Image 1 (cartoon, rainbow, N blue to C red):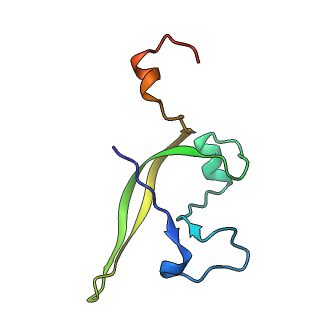
Image 2: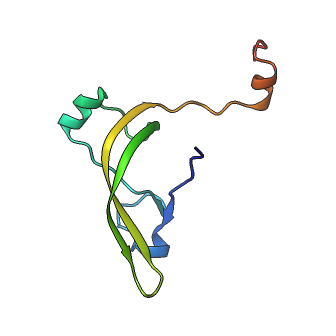
Length: 99
């Protein structure tokens, strides 16, 4: 499965909040204490990147005559892990070499 960026620009669809640091934003997900405990996640620093794997169920679909579309999902199951650094070609071809 290929991961793609979900980055949006405030100038595209939404007004930029006065406290925004940049012109970019991403969709968010809020997890309460019960969900964090179930996932076994310790609170992380803001900005730490993690990988999420989830099973979802479509809960709402919207299509307008103008062509705008949206979907909402319910998260059925999820798991988080530290984000793995991307491997460079040299480390794949020569795994025993030290940098």
